[in-house]
Length: 184
Image 1 (tube, rainbow, N blue to C red):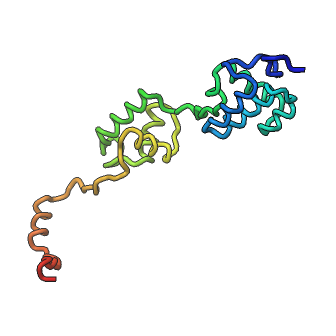
Image 2: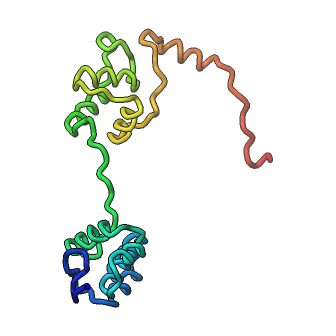
Image 3: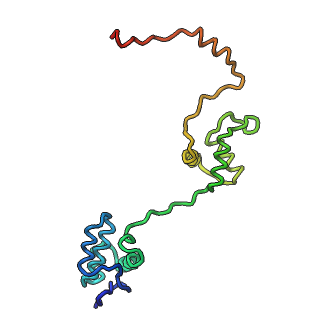
């Protein structure tokens, strides 16, 4: 037998919801899972057995009890699924800032053996500096998070002759000229 104010799950349902009124709150909720849970709690308050009320919400009695406790602690907002925190990042914020500084200063060809950073090169540097093994895709995500784009300038050879480039541009045949809009 369920006593008045008792949710039948081990504790009274708080937050001023009475029999019949919980269903109205459930209908007003925008989250489908929250609505389902509120309707199950309303059914218990209306005198339905815990087993039948749990079936309304597609859960078992223990899960209904757990949701009743969350409802008592946080109100109707406690019946909404929270976002999972996800895995802990391998690089700390300080290490990310150090990586940002490394990328901004660029590689030293004599020391690093490269003229521009690639994810595979940064992977080696991160392993040496921080003793953390990151996948190249993860390094790309971190670089994007730090504000770097995947676009890189065309590499220049260290012994490139700027005068020869300009002389080539001056003697190069101009391409087809576009017609002016008036001639069309």
